[in-house]
Length: 397
Ligand SMILES: Cc1ncc(COP(=O)(O)O)c(C=O)c1O
Image (cartoon, rainbow, N blue to C red; front, side, top):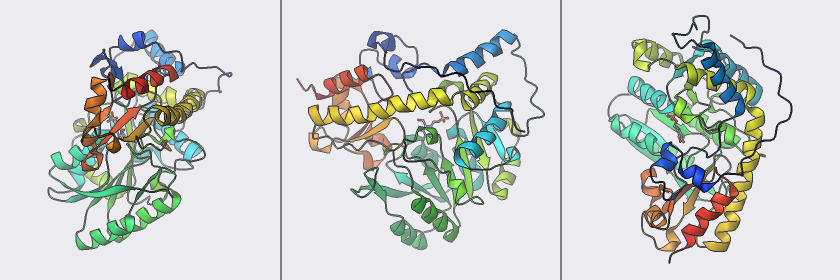
């Protein structure tokens, strides 16, 4: 069901650069609370307050004074957020989908695990581009499925600095078939945005090897111009399950709301074959936040992206000046920097040494063997906090 868009608000300026370290260190969320004595640049939460449109929508829910069961029967995709999602996919990505083919989730990883669980058998092989967002690796292995790695290789020809050998994957799958391609698009942690040619080759490969594609597109709205996000499902509509959330781009991860679009009819049948409550139920606040973010949050998002664009460039300058041995290509999407620290001589897990110097990064080895010698830095903060993070990282005294 479509939703009438609200008129765009008058131009507002948002301030992403006035964060004080003391205020951040007093925040209750896991990013800063886990160790308030360090600069927290690890888990993928941004340091900014959520968009005013999201906060206002949540206040409206509270002011209505009704936290009873919502009446969402007439929304075929679940809550009102599903209709806004469908409209936004058409407007933003040229991807036209039916609300009835969407299903709301509590989070993205839940959707990945449900589809793997219901659509594959123990021992089946699942293709993942590595290094990988760690829950992908756990989702495959903890479900008793086997991992087929597509390792990232350094490439000066690729705008992200990374390339994946899909021809080698094609040969490998001929010898040893797989059932699923679990795609992270855009890719965390390299920030790689799969190009049209890559998406076409992945679609052809999925057709040849009869793969189901699960495409996690949670970072889609964090793609920097001139690159644009193209849903995998545009290229392989009958084979792709797409999972999205507002949680990364609009910084509302704690609200536990995600949405899945199911392209293949057989996957939809499998999902319908299990009792509904196994999926959990959609939270009123999470749905209100996603609806407001997708309908009214784009001015905020554009301003956040402009700030993040500055941060990814500032990081390059700071590293060149203070830690020139670190390999870094600014990501094409996401606010995550994948730092090659192998030349620093800090061992397999350089985040340990950086934590001792007062900065918490994400540990490279958690992203798979390809992460040995690497660390992931989250630059979704102010320029001042980023400067302080790099100053501390470089201070080996
Ligand atoms: C690629 C990717 N997928 C999923 C998630 C987590 O999403 P959720 O909290 O909805 O499971 C993240 C969080 O950083 C992520 O980077």
